[in-house]
Image (cartoon, rainbow, N blue to C red; front, top):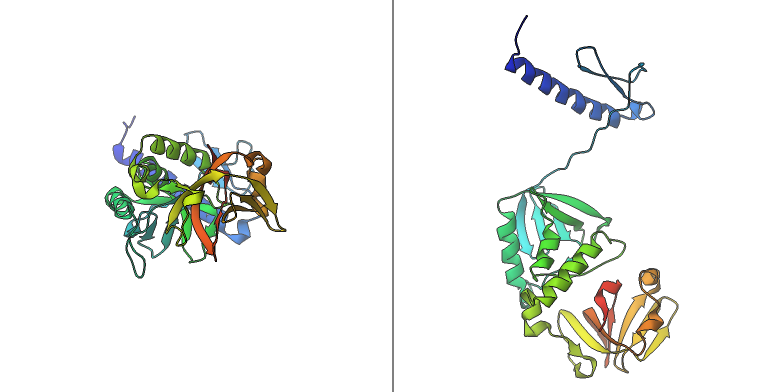
Length: 287
């Protein structure tokens, strides 16, 4: 009786892997698209695959694998380029700007970029692409995960280097991101300990507004409706606006009236009037 041979075992293992690869390729062919692939073991435990029926056959459970990519360039804390040339915008978060072209650096921007460079230089990443796959600049929208399954977007928020920035319909990991931001803010980590990002009372908004990501706080005094937008009125000079398309994500907006509320995002200015677009209740906080 012949003993176990490591080379035979290795050959069998490789053959099994090859069969699985071939099966996946066959499943992708249009001519096989309407049939089922069956798998069954023989008396010696070997595996067989066929599109023909067999008494002991069952449908194989083949799980898709992940592709991992090296990061070629880190532009800032929330934008990178992969080795295949794709530019990736990290979903669900925003980091301060670094200096480039005609934009000045924002407080904390270089910290976020340096953190991301250090984090990604010794690992590859896989992507979880959003429901909305690209933005208006053609960048792929995705959550990044390292080879040890660290959620990079989430880690940036945990470190206080990024704020959450939710753009429906990309709502994956919202709860985790919100919890991480609350914890970082409570511990005054990163930007949460910087005076540049302190909340601005509505009455203190001056003519020039405030550049970049901003926190504005005040009492909601009324609700104003239009065909496409609902406005939370804070004063004659400031409103937060919610697009009706995403209103279902919010509680009853009338519940905000009479309460002190903080809104987070980017200010828009029209003459002496400011507004701020709120896309998700995560950036509209009742105090």
